[in-house]
Image (cartoon, rainbow, N blue to C red):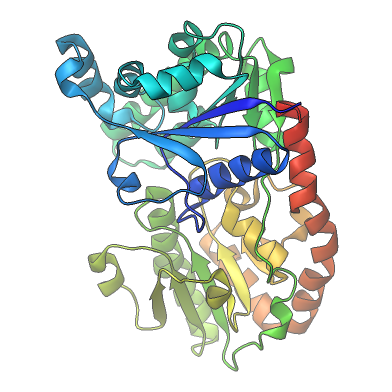
Length: 396
């Protein structure tokens, strides 16, 4: 049966998504369309959506400050520093002021709200279509992400503020469950976190994200560089990625370079100019690449040294499916179905450095293991498996 599905998202997904979150929204809309559903995306009027062209029926809801009450504007200003986990009240008011968007919600069989900040708006949108199925898709568990940030903060006052945010997000997560028919998470780990804290464990469904790129599993045909080259990929505008890079370059790599001075580190993804200029000369900055295969060209292994953040890391899944060795921390590998797929997992700077050195000195063994794992990984993270999981939540 063809269903009318409306996706509410801060990001309007393009054909070539710029980041993991946008990729996830694109994959969902694409799969729902392939399953013969009618998909309409409602996105907010944000800088990230300027000049975007989506292949899906969509609308960017115009900001209408002149129509908002002073109370809403004040609330929006208060919540703006917490936009990653607090409800986007201003977006709700903008949608209610947009006849096209509001009509789409009224006609929908299913309303999907991307990220917790959108899912928290379910009570408001439900008023206009109480019969629809409301699904909240959580890209990570904010209470865990914010709690880790608090633990990493050395300043006592800042740590307290992060702890307060973590506690507040837990309260909001509990409230959110009351108004959603189903909550989608990306891993069994996230399901366990939510189920343990809430009274609604049966509402949580795991929909493991897919990887579409055709080169995965064929990366072994791209010859390794003569000198060991390691990859770290991610947006350095995200504090968990910048934190990981600083830890890697300042505390780990000096130990590696002491044993193997020929080693180089390749950094891929958007980054502030000042950060790039401050890096060691043995760190090569590629910036944003047109094709993800370019980032993997010739590398010996992919590094995922994350200490903060939460949720499944697409950079980890990408590398595993590429068939290259992955050296990760526990935060970097969490949410992955089988942690044994990683070449090495280490937490301390010295242990992480030893892991890199071990991979350098036994590269053929680790490369063979990584390539051997690809068929099994692709069955779980492949497109068909993903669409079957989507079918179970959204129907077909």
